[in-house]
Length: 349
Image 1 (spheres, rainbow, N blue to C red):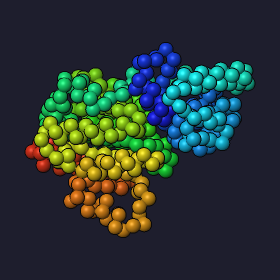
Image 2 (tube, helix red, strand yellow):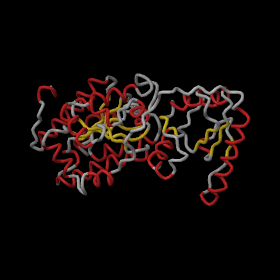
Image 3 (cartoon, one colour):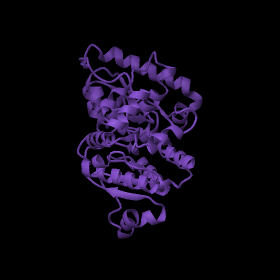
Image 4 (spheres, rainbow, N blue to C red):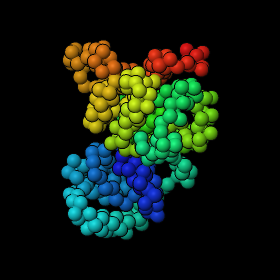
């Protein structure tokens, strides 16, 4: 069973070992609920998305913990450094510990797994290459849908989850619902996708939550209105889609009806992803400001001067609906800049 971006990596490649992989449970905070089912015998961490404090939950449910990288080391976890040349031996040791834990705890800990949970039909592991292949070898069909107004634009909703921006996955899920309702296709990567999957937004049935135009597109193609690109390291692949679209159209990236939001950013990887998006010339929304507000120069550069430097712009907004309004306004302005009409002007207003 996978959690965080490790789970998304496993999910994206799950076809190679579907006999043993049970699925992706969600992001960093979901791991607490997963342990609380009693059904987990061993936690193996390879990165720092295993949240501090999980040790107490693991201890309560008698779950063993193991770290295969020192950055993921927790006080109650055994540390066995990963070495690719010894992967088979390490796998044997992990399985041995899991079996020993199973034998020692299964008679002591009650297993309480909800009978009705999860979604078996998520569309996962999209990339800039597989998306192009799905469209028939080029991005032209997607560009045609955008030109016709059936898809108003594209938004990347990416990054982490935190408990501050309205709670675990709350801002991410509600913003995504707002965007797809406005006929804006959403591409997701990182821990955001865990919440979106668990709320059914990455399943084809979510098409009924989209606006009329986007709903028709999704139902015709059999896809959800939110396409999952995978773990946080795939956020760059979402931004690569913008590069590909700009190439197809022969325009600069800041001219595209494309926007980014990392509403509930948390981990340091989000800094690199956000800087990449802003450097490409994409508007980037955050629900909470980054730790730069002590510098007037940095704040002014990111929020005021950047449009004239790269075309990018940092938007800070703690409210879902007003954020959706701002992102939609940017997308509509860029459509008009490309000479594209907006079919549903009244709804946009």
